[in-house]
Image (tube, rainbow, N blue to C red; front, side, top):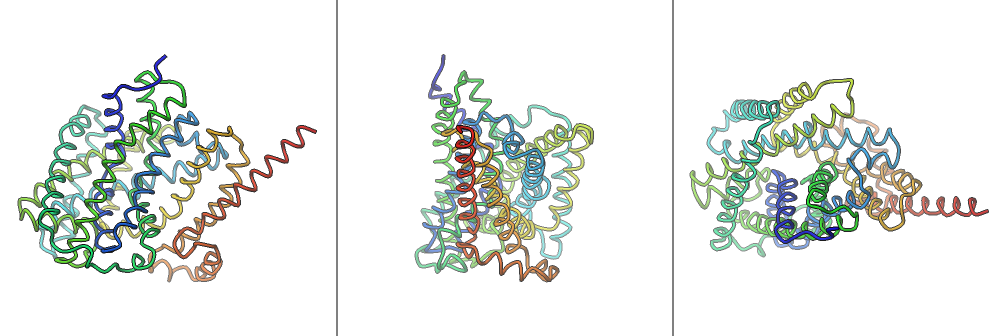
Length: 451
């Protein structure tokens, strides 16, 4: 029986993992964090890599350890209602609500917006996203080899150009990073702010949603034992995550440099467009725009396909795969026209809610690998986590929604009493308390059964 992968198989799995989780958000948010963090970029980057690199890897390892076939199976460890609610919420978040529209708006912001007059931006965004999602819908309804072609040709091209941009920026810096003063929360809590900023990549959610694809790919390479699967996932994932961490460092560094010339930009898409134009002029902007658009098309195609497949399987008596694909593509087109900055603003509160739940589920799956499955641990931990995460959700809502919810201030006062709430980690102690209570219930059950 085979227990380990060969060297070239590790590289294959690593490239699959990189392609699966590296998308638009992995580009724009490190650059944005660099501009805001300035001289505090290193602690911010460490925090960012924990949620943007380490946790996705642990999420995939957790799936292999528990031998879960899907995200729904993980949710069923609590109960069926939770499984349906969490699966739907997570796929809608990484699908038509936020991640799919973001692929189109990032492509426009980087590739087309610099060449469109300010007064023509709304019409330009509308036209660009209409064509973008027409292509997405066309190929999602007609599966073909285009995804493989884009993955094998355009991803390397994108990484090549990104590498040229990074090397050029490092050799010819726009300014001195260590002279750039940190702004906002980065002045006092750079590490925890970077940790929360890593939520925006949505990589933990993607790992839970698509991790079973990677695990099944390793199984097809000849491994079957859960321990062997976990070991191979972690080893191959180390290569992929090391590359991601390097790219994050480089983007954060050149983002911090850019502040010396451009100040604070509205979002990471603007930052990348400015950096490309600064070093390579109009040609650089066009080339970066083309490669990012192609990469984002691949991501959008994969997400529309995955979401449509999941919902048609979860609700077999509702819509067909094709109708879901049309629905998600049209809905994503509408959402994309609110603009990148608004999508980011409205996505963050949802991520404040889903990420703690996802992190706790990953931790519980890892614990299950050591002590076995025990439902009280899952249920009690989630009872502690979800309400605390809901407070973070409400706190992160855009200002306009705060005014529309008159009772929100009294809710804030309750949420602010939680330890670590000020840094967005108010869910940590309630989750630990729930885990301890679940352990006590389990111990009592064992005493009763022994008696």
